[in-house]
Image (cartoon, rainbow, N blue to C red; front, side, top):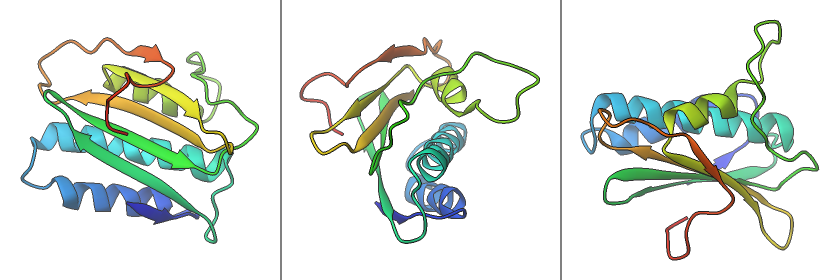
Length: 143
């Protein structure tokens, strides 16, 4: 899905994802996927300056036991990273939350500088989430 940027991009992406997942997976997992998409799109808007005149790409792929989420934006000089929790800081919890909800996540850049952040959300919510962090998804994986 190509999403036009701007301050309302996270809420538009969330609604679009929820409409795509309606009836396809359980409501808790769909809510987690929508939340993660919203966080990743927010990071693209804020850190990669994806305003109304720019776009980003949100990809969802259902794999055997998980949903792979990828958000690709034009990139920035800031390397996406997980900040340690700090109760005194406003914001900065997006990638921490993504890591907590996912089995695996990572960041990559292509040859022209676009950033791609991906993660895997388990379909079986009873499984323990490991929050493993990696660079790129395994070869042959969608995304």
